[in-house]
Image (cartoon, helix red, strand yellow):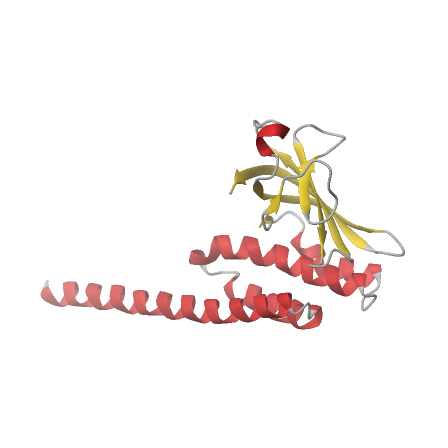
Length: 196
């Protein structure tokens, strides 16, 4: 009995150490991705994100991180597309594997009369949030995100105005549009939102 208990404790201890090492390894690589994003080095962030995403794809403890990295990957490829480092076809081929996966998008302020790095309710559907996603300076467009909220948007525009909204959803459709400023059009379903 003592041997079984000792083996069980040892197994739990090894598992905890492995999880801690996985988390530390993830954090270091994720921070490097954030640095590449802040420097707008899309080639580097695209490579780093794809690699880290593949490393954690099967790890149970990284479900939320996968959702965030999937969106970061599209954002990075959007940067390459907008700078004409990828054709529309090449950009779509790089991200198409993410169709039907869940993602968490970065929080943006809800501003009704705004089109640069902000969120508002879509003109076409009162239960869909629309976000125009740009680079930090607002000079490039990477994607138009449409997130249909599963149970409907419960808050009024007035209640949301000026607050940061974080969106989550399942990517239903992905396409590339635009010529002078090529960008992704992302349509999400089963969405949810959180006021930050």
